[in-house]
Image 1: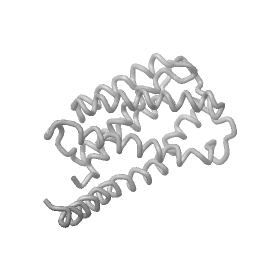
Image 2 (image 1 turned 30 degrees about the horizontal axis):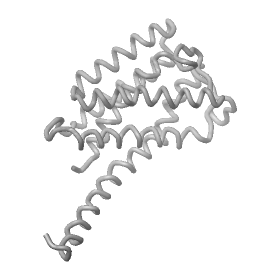
Image 3 (image 1 turned 180 degrees about the horizontal axis):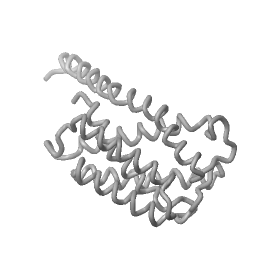
Image 4 (image 1 turned 60 degrees about the vertical axis):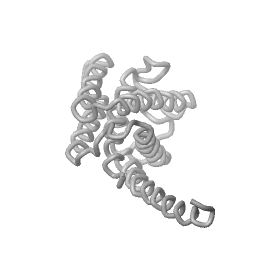
Length: 202
C-alpha cells in the first residue's frame, strides 16, 4: 500500500471504531447515570451508607456522574480486554444472559442493603451471586480478570471517597469500606461487561 491510498483505508477504519465506541458508550452512560443512583438508594435508604451532605432523596448531586463514570469504565474496559484475548475466546452474549446478569446484580445490591445478619451473611450471599453469575453466564478468563479488576478498583474508589469524608459505610472492615463491596463490584462487572459486549456491533 502506498502513501496515497493509506489515508483512504485508515479513515473508514477510524470512523467504524468511533461508531462502535459511541454505540456502546452512550447507552452505558445513560444507564449508569439513571439506574445507578436508583440502586444506590438501596444503600442510602437502608442505612448501609450515608452521605456527608445528602440532598434530595438522600442522594448528592455528584451521584449520577459518579455512576456514569463507573458504568463507562467497567463496560469499556471489558471490551478492551476482549480485543486483547485470543480470537473466539468468547461469543457475543445473548439478551437473556444480559438480563439474568442484571437481575443478579440488582439482587446483590438489594442483599447488600437489606439482608439481615451483618457483613458475614452479606459476604456469603454476594459471594454466591458473584461466583454463580460468572460460572452460569460468563465463564471466560477475560471475564474473571475483569471481575477481579473491578472488585479492586471499586474498593479503591470507595476507599478514596470515604477518606475524603464524602460518605460513610455502616461497617468498614476493609479500611473503612464494607467487606462485601468487592463482591458487589464483581457482580457489576459481569452484568455491565456482558451488556457492553452485547451492545458492541463488532
